Length: 158
Image (cartoon, rainbow, N blue to C red; front, side, top):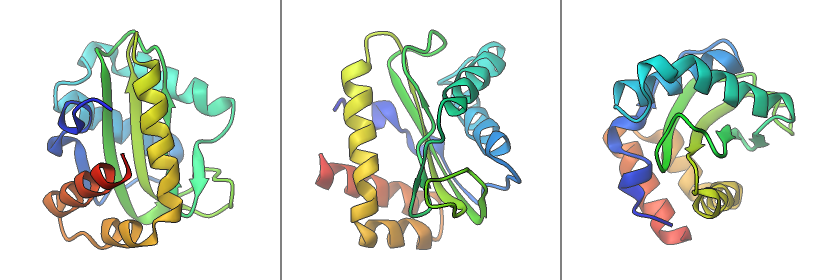
């Protein structure tokens, strides 16, 4: 995979996501990408619509409290970009196990990123088998601690 920090930047990590629904959570993570300069504010609604269109074909709630909403060939981003959010309350995400989601990775893949997008998705999907990383992410005291955990996790799983 390309350099992690070119995909998921430290400023694209948010703890304490307050969202009453899947759309609320996705909007919050897209806003994080807008605030960090990875998505233009003018494209925010189109990106949201693309993510929700993908969700309408099947929830990306993987179970074990993890969701990975994503869009391929998103014309509103360059390269592969991602955001991470943690919800302490949990978000109803229509996950396969029916449980609320606490750890959300949003991935937006621009044109020509299909292979990197697929690799990143596979890596994140394998998280369910790594309870120690999940526990560290759930227990991270702040965004910097969550970022360090994500970085270590992705480097070890790559």
